[in-house]
Image 1 (spheres, rainbow, N blue to C red):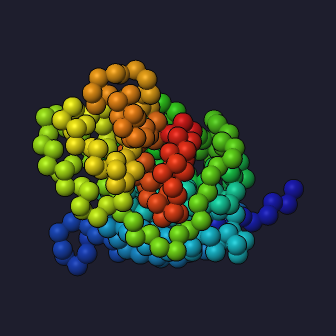
Image 2 (image 1 turned 135 degrees about the horizontal axis):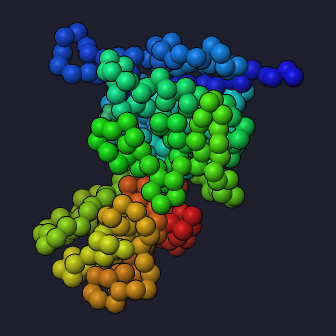
Image 3 (image 1 turned 90 degrees about the horizontal axis):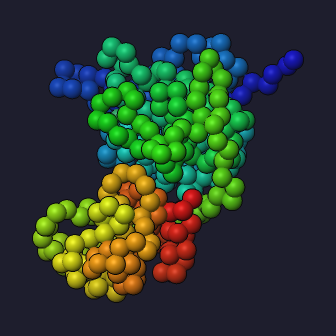
Length: 334
Ligand code: DAS
């Protein structure tokens, strides 16, 4: 039977997957672009996939800015408008989960938007970049992976942007979706799908301006409250706290949150790394019942970093406090 050639667009932003030692300087830095990466993949020619290639940037992922991501997003959307079956964005792994979630909030198409990277540079033994990129291309080309929004492919696993996290500094198995697991797995060039996409995904319009800044702060044992006291005057428009356990702070931190809540939305997430914040378990000062009564929202199962990005997107969209509350609840429970 005739099988149509799939079209996949690959845009590269940098990261270890693009890094080589640069003119005798110490260590590796981003030098390779989309053409170089495509040439490094064994077995690509056997697949019925046509590639469109674009080097978008050569950055370490910690230096990616929102503007970089929105430019990449506009480019990716254009590829789909021009007929691509899916898009792959390549970047560093350090901020991959954040980029993927931000992209997910703004990706309106059924076609997959797949992010990938590598834990080992091309010059290291057992470099994982070519295999990750090949798996990402196959995922992007697959009709079975439509309607999930943004996905992260690392080590033959396909993860949803909402859940995936980098959990190890150097391991090639650094990425996982705790509790829920990957949504699909690639084996022998076939996707084995474990879970269907959630219906009614909410998608934001790309904002005209994204100047509003939010702060993420992690609570720690017997910390000073000086930073919390300064927050209302630092120019932030929203605060996310990575709180203890299922969403708590100390009594003394709780006591300095009132002026912040008066000025900006405050969301309590959990610093634990997995599981959801609670709503009605703890009644002590600084516990979640008390914090909610003060007007603080609970992040549910959304991790602190992604909660911050959701809050950014909501503020950039001009959402009211009530709309922020409703949307945080929806994503936190989703
Ligand atoms: N940690 C590197 C990576 O895995 C660098 C980066 O994130 O850009 O790609």
